[in-house]
Length: 337
Image (cartoon, rainbow, N blue to C red; front, side, top):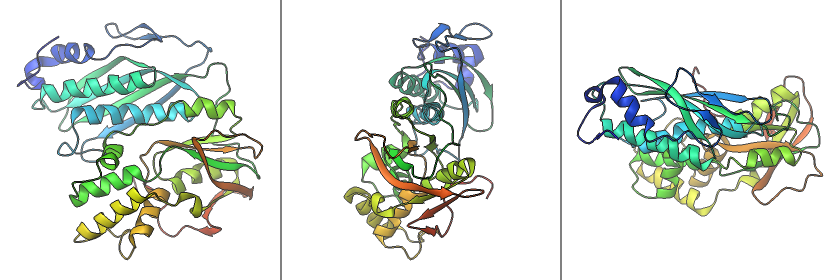
């Protein structure tokens, strides 16, 4: 392994950087051929491949002052593999394109590779290839591959009137972590970690498929916004029950700390009580990468799935409400708003 301490990526050079990164990223159990050739070869046991790609941009999705290389690696892997899980598939492999300034610390890049490998390994996958380039800031593009194990994919379209809507995983924790970092509140480490290093429950996706989920999505932009995608694809009205989203004490305490520390609250936070701010994080925060799915009412859901709403009726164009009323304000993140 090439020593990275005290060196920049320019010091390593392209091939040295690739060697340093590859040494930290095992290909995983589904790889028939990993890093080292023009392409990788990944097994597709069920005969089909599920694929998803996501971008991480310095200054948009992470700040070097907040995030270590390990943090960014975990986050990059999680974002793409959560999309694989949302189709009811098992993640099998990652392809990583990485661009950075030549002045970037080689140690930071090595930690990035370790984070990618760690999160891929947690999901049972590996890193099988990618590319590197010089850029003015750090950019990552991660393509995740997955296998359906003989099941049909669970799409966004398919939610039916009478279905229950349930979530596996936390809501609002990443948004709380981001707000804590922005406000300079040096406490609530678990919430800060939820923003820097999300930890999706990948196994919940295939589990939902086996349980008969009619539609599913990764909550990356915000619960209201992402269920809006399901509603539109399904031509249905989805109603969220806010009483099922009552934030825990930690989230409410974090909201109080942010409110007390913020000298100039953001436009979406002005005038909100800590309880209301915590609920807004849960409804619109995004980046928890939990899974939201619709299930037939007869489905026996395991404890990890929390029912948070219903599919009420068919609705041309789809719509989402909270407690029967349209949600006031943005339902989540949108890049080009």
